[in-house]
Length: 214
Ligand SMILES: [Zn+2]
Image 1 (cartoon, rainbow, N blue to C red):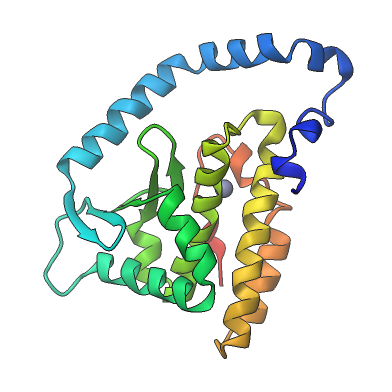
Image 2 (cartoon, rainbow, N blue to C red):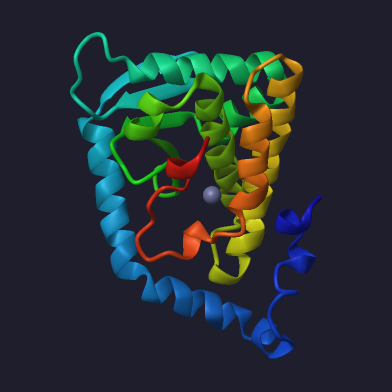
């Protein structure tokens, strides 16, 4: 069990007084977020309803954009999932269990949609990135899904640890890619190692962390 999943450490970053009020803090936090949660709920359900859906093994894959026939983002998602399965079958099974919905749309970066338990992949990144980088994005968002299943959401005081955990899991996959002979993994590893120094999650308007990826 690491820091992000160990409940005894959840509050170690905040003073004792705050720990005692943590129930109230959580309630206040959710209450303050109600308008954005309502908006997020509507957004996610609409996207799921409108997008073109297809089944692939255990997954439901959604294509939100209307594209030419030769642009096949879902094919790249499938390639990335197969790559994860090939390198780390156990992780693949966990992803299929934790977040069996993946939706592709133009967005400001990949993210996890907690209302509908969906991994959102940014089409802009998908078009630009290799299959390996797409696999990393899925691994990252799948950790958010796994933590959410355990009741660990992105509380502001936990956010750094949660992101650190997601990046660490990406790093594990990069090592597997390197062993499998992928090129450029050193650059990706260096980028991952430095990425936590810029808290992209705290920026008011997320510009998509992967926009600066190698
Ligand atoms: Zn994240």
